[in-house]
Image (tube, rainbow, N blue to C red; front, top):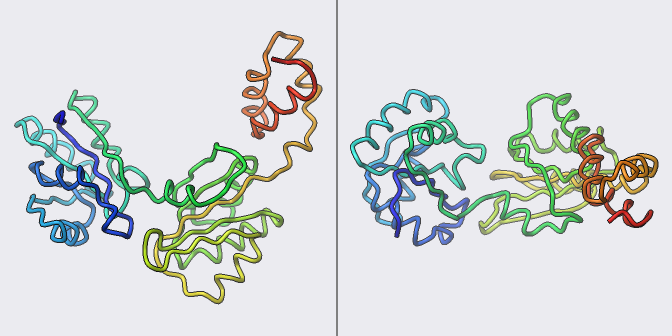
Length: 273
């Protein structure tokens, strides 16, 4: 197996059985494990009988750890980065050190493994492949409404906390009354639940159910692009020599519309291939 200087290692998001053999091997063989919360990581290491030394690396000490890590790697040692759960750099620390490592020509690799977004989306039927992941939602209602407006033509995936979810759903209902939503919680755990329905029904469901664990949510795109008439714009771009694929990309970027729907309008409205 090829050796690297720095390993980004996913850890289970709930079910310890999702820990890969390669992750265990890497954590056993590196010299140091950089982790968010040493107490959380130590429980994982104890379970798999991993004795490697840990050092804290979180959002409050990211920048000050950089030189320390660079010096260790300069001595020829190896480092693995883990977060409390899931894949580092997905709403977790890591971007600062990875940027510096690449600047200084250290080799970096990421292992395949647990990720809440992928685990969630693989259970949620969608009309298109494209989506936007916005991480944890902002705190104010106005900021959330701005995101809902910006991404109304794209499936929007987000993280949220149990104590905020009902308020978030109320904001979604207010901004997009006819929206459909999917909510997942306790993914890979015993009480895993994914609910898909209109926003009002989702709110009613969680009003009567105890909310625990991390939340992954999705606001489905508005199916309104097909009703929007781009025919004049399509004809204009066609006259300039653009192909259907190019037209769909241009108009989707300009009007924040669904690229696939515009492409359908292109090919059903005439021979634009």
